[in-house]
Length: 191
Length: 87
Image 1: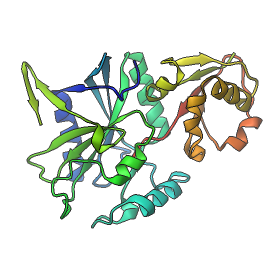
Image 2: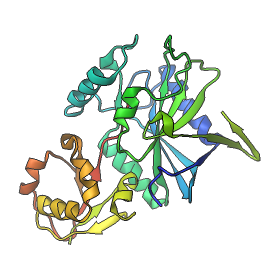
Image 3: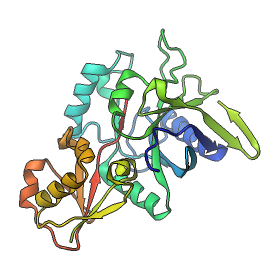
């Protein structure tokens, strides 16, 4: 089964969750890898295995290159921002991530080789909004960008860096949330 | 015959297959036949300017109007990459 829409549970081993947090914290601290796009944005893929209606995270693939400012992506993303983004203190032109197709193909190929499926993407929300202080749910822009993707959007709240949290939504739709179980040895905790 | 490689998120539209062999001498002919076989994958036509196609490991940044001029060999692998984006 490769449609993820009916999936009801998702387990993320604690090391994978730490990997996401470290990626987010590193970008927030302004520490960049060689060739990595700069900015307070962390974006990546989530891959693993499917067991009926359950998913298990096995690999986090941090995206390095954001092609958001390259054509034809810039025109597309600027339009999406104008039509769907809620104004924030981050300027619209600085928001958004589009994964480089070369990097994306490489990640798909590597997952295929290791018999893993890509079932999600993650990105962080950093700035608290008056009506949404935690920012752990998809924005309307997130939902539009995830449309028809057959992927879970993992929203990482880094509003309080000392208390990060993650939630997962099929195609970025709030009503299609599944619980993320962070598994640490025998201990399973809902974050 | 050329092979079309389908990324895992799109496989639900293609009977869960990773690759499909499609007869065609050009990218256009191959893609038309492929999309005829799996019409649900026509969703990739949406914002087609953003679709990236790789022929083997070479990125062919393409709008569909250029597909006709791209001829294929029988052992070519075509990979479809739909951009993944977030706010």
